[in-house]
Each structure stands twice: as structure tokens, then as C-alpha cells.
Length: 468
Image (cartoon, rainbow, N blue to C red; front, side, top):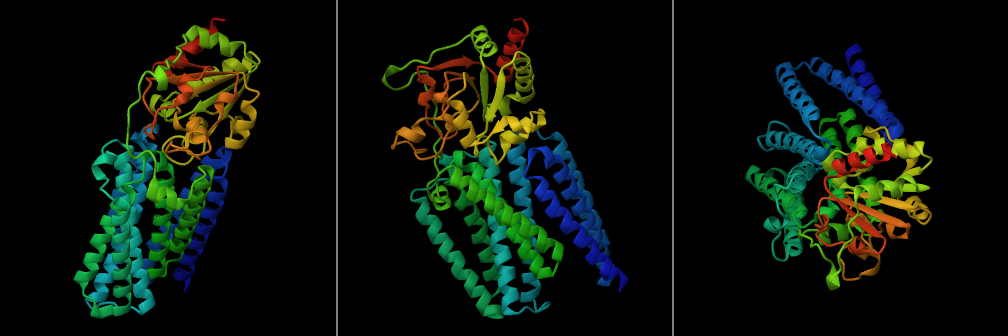
């Protein structure tokens, strides 16, 4: 009786650590501790899982140890080598692998069922088939999301004519097969289950294909919730409490985050899925409509403007991540603060390529959390801000979202940087943002462009400010 109780105790400790760690993740100040605590909880849960073969009188330790070694080495090396700019891609891959695990587990149980090795009730069979479906969609959907984020896959190459109708037909077929497999039981063949798996994998790709780049943070969050639901369902199959608890936490957190991000974009989840904007990449031009020409600033001009300002607000975007400029921005922040300038950061909910991307970057540079303003607070503060410095952001500061009904991002709340007294935009070129549309802000009367690599430009600004 001791070993079964020990397994349950380890699972309980792991579950408590998961919940506590998730709570600490709600603030950048405590997120690192939360991540470590959740990792410790997973380690304790793995110890419990290592004892279970003894309890069940099975000898699977070779498989367990091999799996731990391969997974541990791959995970460690990936985490060590990954650049911060590629973090969304890594999240997508790891999330997809979680879905793949759920798929493999469900496939193994269904194979035993159809070979009359392991009987199932109708309810158990339904859970297994559902796990197969949700895991497969999460796996292939996440892999395609990775390809899009990494630039390997172009939207135009995966979007078909009337793609929404194709997705609807695929979904209906998959649902019909799901019901059939669940109700018919042994009457349905293993080949039909294989067809169901194949169509589920295809639907995962087709589901993500039409969703535009600007909606990718929402998609990643949604797919993350799918993986959590798949893990929870797999936990039901095996009667494993820690898989069930962990899956529920991931699924619930991913779902809540998806809903919050959709609200922040003023769009429904259905609208994101079937009408994702930014699915047709486009390049920008050096001029806007009516032959508008952007005004260009020099490093010295910008440095003087910031040095003698009362308040400066940085607006970070994906360009900040690409240039790895967050620590250089923090250095400039310190110099300005030493001169009495009030420095803040405006964080848009979908800036970057994944939820919280900018928060993670700035936390890495030790920017104090109170300096990070959310969308509403930032828009309130912008009215009294002397200078806004936009570092690689584009779509999240596009005024077309508010005043151009024909724009694909119309209705999305944005940072209203044009309310500040002066606007400086740091960009490599006049190219369009991830949504594939030009930004009229670049031609605004208050706006000046400082062209170049963000990190290099900010380093020059740091030097100029030091010389003042």
C-alpha cells in the first residue's frame, strides 16, 4: 500500500506546484520563480510516474529511461540554443509535440481496442477518439504555425480558393467519423480509425492555413489550449490524475488567454479563425497615398529630443526582438531617467509573435514591471507624453484600425501614439507590417523616421546622450 500512496502523494505535490507556478506566472516579477516551481512540480510528477510500473507489476523502465534521455537532451539543447526572436517558433514546436504525444497515446489505445486486446466502454472509446482528433489538430496546426512564423511557409502557398468552405466540409466529415467510430465500436474497422486520424491531421493544417500572420499570437494560444485539452483527455484514458490536472490547467489557461486576446483585438474568435487578417503579405513603399513622403530624422536630432523631454514612451514590437535591442533600450532608459526623464513602455496585447512576447523581452533586460503599461493605461498616458519611440512596431500603432473601414485591421484597438507631441519610428525600411498593409502613421505630421537596425540606432542614441 505504501507505493500506491507514494505515487498519489507525488502527483498531489506536482499538481499543487503546477497551480502555484501558474499563479506566479501572472506577473513578470514572479514569472521566473513560477516557471522554476512548475518545472520542479513536473519533476516530482515524473518521479511518481517512475514508481507506477512497480505498482502495476510491469517492466517498462527501458522505454521510460530512453524517452527521458531523448526528450531531456533535445529539450535542453533547444532551450540553450534558441534565440529570443525564435521563441514563438519554439513554443509552436513544443506545443505541437505535446499534441503529437496525445495522438500517439490515443492511437495506441485504439489499436489495442480494435485488436481485442483492451476492451472499452462507449464513453471510454469516445474519449480516445476525441483525444486522437484534438491531438492531431494541435500537432499539424502547430507545425504549420511554426512554418509561418519562421518564414518557411508562405500564406499564398497554403490558402486555397474558398478555404473557409473547405474547412467547414472537412470539419463536418471529421465530426461524422467521430460519432460513427464512437457509436459503432468494433463494427467500425481500424482502417476507418486510420482514415479519421489522417483527416484530423489534414484538418489541423487546413484550419491554420488561412489565419494571417497578425493573428498568430491568438492562434498559438488557441493551439496551446487544444494541447492541454488533449493531455487532459489522455489523462482520462489512463486514469492518470497528474495528466488530467496538468491538461486542464493548460487548456483552461490557453482558452482564457485566447478570449482575452480576442477581446483586446475587438474581434471574435470565429472572426480570427475564418477571416484572419494579414494572410497576404505585402511590401511597403517609400511613399504613402497621394505621394506622401516620410520625414527622416538624424540620430543627433532624436537624442536631443529625448534628452530634453519630460516624458518618453517606448513602443516595442517584433523589430525589437529581431534586433535583440531590449538591453540597449534599457541602457538608454537608464540614461534618460538619470536626466530626470520619465520613461515608460507601451505594451500592446498582440505585439510580437506570441502572447506576452514583449513582456518577456523587457523582463530579460530587467525593465521594472511598473514601467510596462497595458493598452488602456498607455493610451491614457500618451496624451501627456512628449516623445514616443516606436521600436519595430507597425500594425499595433496603425491609425487605419480606427479610421479606415476598408482596412483589414479596422476595429482592432491600437496604441494611439499620434496623441503624443512627437513620434520617432525606428525601422529598417518603409516595408509593411506583418498584416501586409502600409501604415499611414509613417507620414503623419508628428512622425519622423530613423532608419537602420534597431540595436545599432539605439546604441548610437546611447552614445549621443552620454556625450550631452
